[in-house]
Length: 354
Image (tube, rainbow, N blue to C red; front, side, top):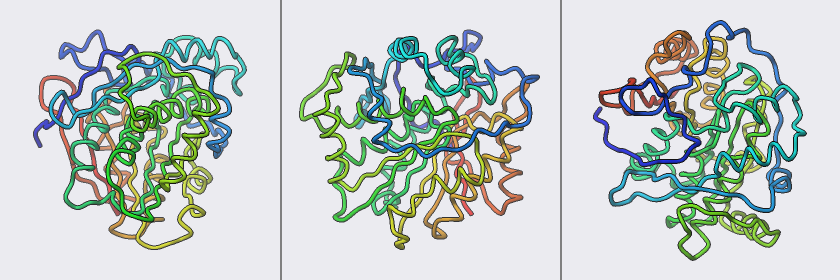
């Protein structure tokens, strides 16, 4: 399939590979040493309430903007928190749950340390592929898959650009009456949820609902009144948010599925999104089981997963073929929804179903 979209960006938090002769963005493989990949260590999954994540926000956040959907008609700016602003907060607080995790988060954020820090503070190129595909293809599709009651799940969310695109769509498009939407976001590192995901969702909401045009970069004061308005507005629109952190496991699957939001009602559709999550053989099986569990918990024909990835992760061992094999063994099927065009590393968006 042809490369039908493009995007613009200049922010420092998008990792660039100096050895990529195409001038594109790097993959996580640039920062992973194959010898460091070992059996996945268990980090107990936790469900994080929006109230708690909002309570930990600083008084002000600085932001810049990504251009989603290219520079043509239908494109839009998506504000997101600046990486240097995250660093300032980390250095000021110095009290995250895992000291080794803090050393990495507060130091070189370019380095992936398997089972310690999985790159969640950076925006990786496949995340932008997926965000733009959502904006230009999925959300514009004639099948109207996302128009009813919806559970949107982003695994390995990091800066959660795809989730922000989904929220932007929900806030700016006419919605059916009595609609319920649950946006679930997950990352291995719990600090990532409060440092970048919730700030980015708040920025997305503010840019879409403030009633005024905001600058492409600047700062936003997070007053109690603003945060209260954010919560009230989402509640009035039937939009629920929750975060999950920790290792991919059965417990993780259970925390991620919000039965209390939909009250087991029928007709709920599930859309799973993930980017750069199949690079490591040590976590590939666990990730695939999470995807299959979420698809299996939904009504048949009402669920699909979109996974953005490199075709190969050289020197690491993961990639599309390994994921396809795992998925088929668990009863799933896979098709290529989008593929990049040369030059550069071959990137894909895969659609998985049961």
